[in-house]
Length: 476
Image 1 (tube, rainbow, N blue to C red):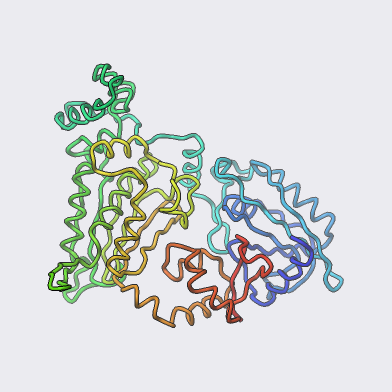
Image 2 (cartoon, one colour; image 1 turned 30 degrees about the vertical axis):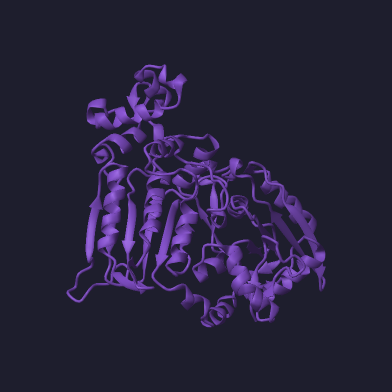
């Protein structure tokens, strides 16, 4: 940043008196902080990076104390950056204000293929951090593994299941699948079935693979007890609330079987736990469920296909939770690869389980054309329900459907008023999007924030760069 931008940032800090997901404050009045590696790691491990500003004492009501020696401080910052793997190259800026010096270090986000960035002194598992709100938290072992799995292209859907044999599969279904694979592929059809099984990952080194078990075994839970769906209906808006008779659950089911079985049973569970109303239009009667079943089906199949099947998550089931005002469908494994939450349904994603996805396409269970998210959005729009919310939460992905009608959101002035209060603390696009319960950050900014900016009720932290990924929105 320029010196003027740093001065503006200092003014904003005095106004807001807080740190954010992309801003860390350090005093450095006496010496360089000894432990920068947690922030260096967490900022490097997020797409937008982050900025560390030295010379502001958070513990003394954000006093502008200045740094002890800007020259020596820059040297020591660089020394700590050299202790990271991969090495971090910060952009350093120095500014003088009222006889005191301040230093900023802009830490760029590294490419996904190079993550996690970690402190070499503690190693990859203990030296990797992630930014949660305004704090730096140690990454879990699974979060570290997720980056490695993407970088090395692990295929957990075709790992061998040593206990499984062909006799434990539904033979007719396997035979039909092989015939479908051969159809229209003369070169593949020329091979014998054993070769096809190895080539198409039905087996791996002559052992049955996980995807084969999940598709063709009548009971995959014999091998993986938690690769199932747990479904509950709750008499309230939060877990723990009880009904009139003291019941915690209105319905509670463990859904097992292969993927096709679980999909069918999950839809049956959802259907029996939501109301159906009758709508008469132009003399025609239409029975409409609270949530569009087509959207629910897409969300469930996405969870089954794109969940993480690694050993790190095989003890975690998919969850369906139905509340008084909403339904949540959660699966282990966050968004895979480079795709961001606001790009869902707009860009072709990386596929975590390509063999499983391809097999289900051949069998006609899923299209595998990346149409799931657009279909969900269109179906919710057709029912005049508010946009579904998609969340990527530290190794967990969730889809949330609300019963609330879309008109209630669009026509309410409470959203604008609440947003002003929410932005008393500077907020990122992502935070505003989540606050509004929307899945698209660009839509949230355009629909709700821009009118407030135009009217002067909300201000930009970087007004000269309104599209900056480091932009913060705040109200006075």
